[in-house]
Length: 136
Image 1 (cartoon, rainbow, N blue to C red):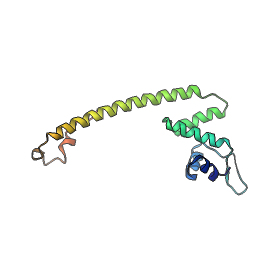
Image 2 (tube, rainbow, N blue to C red; image 1 turned 90 degrees about the vertical axis):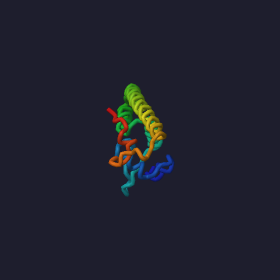
Image 3 (cartoon, rainbow, N blue to C red; image 1 turned 90 degrees about the horizontal axis):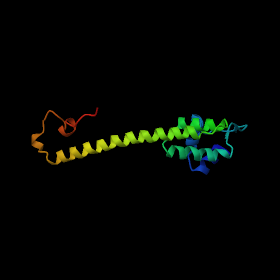
Image 4 (tube, helix red, strand yellow; image 1 turned 45 degrees about the horizontal axis):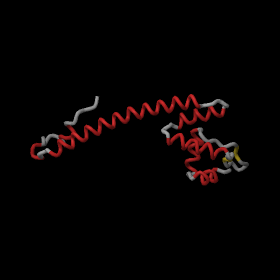
């Protein structure tokens, strides 16, 4: 299949397929005599795998490693399990950061409700932001 056909069949742009080719997660099997990239039928499944892995938060470099393991005939399950655990831990940390930010924003919103604009320090742009606690 030519690049346009694979793009149409998976619902992606030709630019996306070229990008995935360039980063090494999709690769043409060969080139035609006129230089067109030609993809095997398994490129469709490979594309779907890439999109599913991205939906789980895996990065293209990680996905490339998973595919390389499979291409060498190795089972990538252990590696994938480690990636998933790491991504879950990253999400836990990010959720904690977001919860702390939400608390801070709610505190600032309550302070803003009691704000008397005449009491604002004219040297500051906005004392709500500039007097907010700094992280770390």
